[in-house]
Image (cartoon, rainbow, N blue to C red; front, side, top):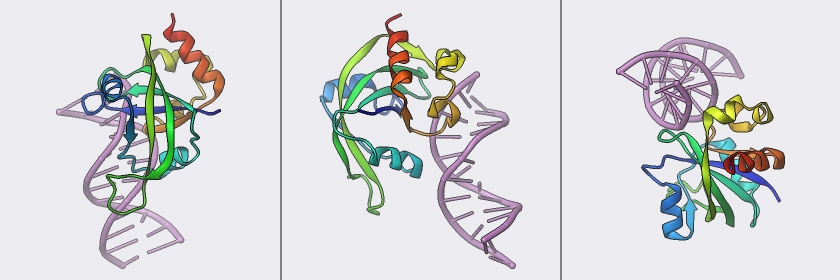
Length: 135
DNA sequence: GCCAACGTTGGC
DNA sequence: GCCAACGTTGGC
């Protein structure tokens, strides 16, 4: 099983929106590195949902429920999307500031490449963020 | 194929 | 609102 971190601006699509819908297509990704990450996702993989711009924090866990397929919002046929479902919302959110200042997370792909909207997490990194969310 | 100009993302 | 980091575009 692999672990991921996926960003969304909460005024566009938040964790609560995902909970309300029950499941959603993670569409609109238009970056090659992010696409490669999505192509590597397998059903059952876990992903951390991160709120960019507003909040700037990890807010919960979701699961990949459908592997990469053509993005329904893409006219060109070049881009893919996965489908995700909520697993659980964090009791305490984990801020970017916290993640940046934690040596255990210094190698996180998102920390190294801050603009990447879909990034990989090592299992240890995923577990560490979850532990931080439990305070 | 290089590189300058420009656009976008996202943190602050 | 600013700016750094990237990605993309287009002239040469």
